Image 1: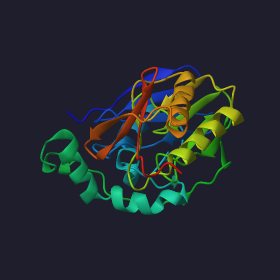
Image 2: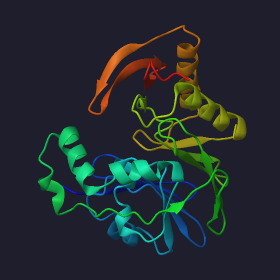
Image 3: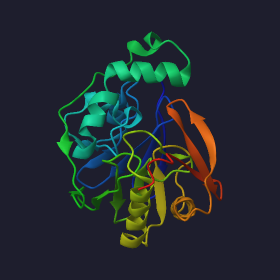
Length: 262
């Protein structure tokens, strides 16, 4: 039941699918590896990684949500943007993850208690432009507030790939929660990605499917443009975590708060 699976891509990129379908990535260098996100923290990701890798590795989080930092407690070196430290402390606690599991999976959380990874709060700070040398490749941090205030992406210069967390996914990007940035700020972050790295060839998002093309990014930006230009309002959409107005372009959507446009 508590199984991790993985697939390998060219260029030393491994995509791990965790118990709830979360995507965890490993970027393998000649001297060390970077692990991007740790999932909900159900079952031992460390045991799985130790079977996959024969290099030292460290962890970075794309943002402070429980399905991205829940497994951090198994690792000594974990980075997160400071603007998500407070969010992480409240939402990655064992208590909140139990609550999240019950409302997402509709099962009693004690089913997973034995496999729940403990909370870890000894985080190291990420910053915009911060780079990590893996030996034969450099990974650069890009601060892209929107989905959360501390959301980041990681750019791999070697493969021209972007690890986008929940900022750019084929699934709906949530922008309706109180800890989200404004729709305008989210649009600015997308423009930053497009303007800074127009050469990006592939996106590796926090949720399936993966990888996806840069057209997804342009579709997200078009969703924002239509709302801010009053061309489209969208329709109300409910999720397990709340509701907002949903706009879709070419099968790619966002759910936003109409009271938090700017």
